[in-house]
Image (tube, rainbow, N blue to C red; front, side):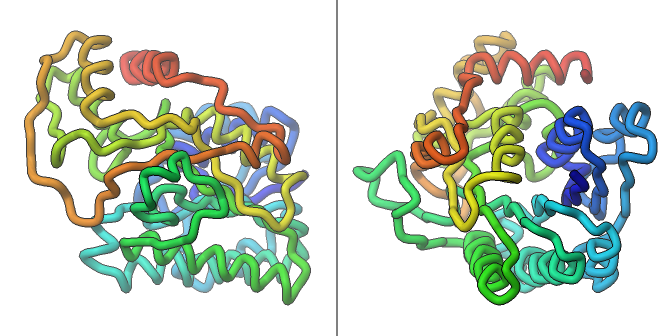
Length: 315
């Protein structure tokens, strides 16, 4: 198989690239390196030879259409996105340019290439918004009610995916991801809370918890998420799947577990809640289990251990 991975130098994307190469596929990575890092692809480049190519391009550029079209991929895995909720609130136009117009360019490139399938990374938390807590964990029938421009842009991206499927016969699968964490996640800037806490705890620096800390998230390990993308290349056509562990973990509980593992302070620094932040989130992945044969195999304790080990050693 020949694959394109947008955002393939990011922590999820590069882990997917490693898996695809290990399975014998050829991969073209498109990444503007704004949040991705070439170092994430270093090991793969040293062993894959000409089976891996990196094109540094922003999906807001029309050149991205031509690069995807020229790649002639069987499957396009579209992971590149502006993924900072706060940034989307501050600049919703830039968010839409990256996530909506960028997705349209990916789909145009796939159409021109005759790509058989596009697999889209969506956001399981922001897509559904702050749903009725009694419904948790949320399944795919939950109404889509995004409460941030980022969530709205991911909803729009999914709508365009369906339109291109209807108009041009491109097969598609959309994966609504829970809070993904694991090795290679950037501990600086807008990163997942597991990576931020890990980086600061190992550096002996204080961690900040925003709001009450009782807001919950569904944490899913990056290796499990990559399993879902690989499965979706050949299964689950025309469907949206939740990809999560289905377990609510509070930010306070997460901090206590991680501080205990690393030997950090019992209490974090407290700060006001952030605009647009969901209060509770967990996803029911029963449909993915049934149709993709996918399960979240790595529990949070084991995933945190692996993440901490990676941050300590860099590998």
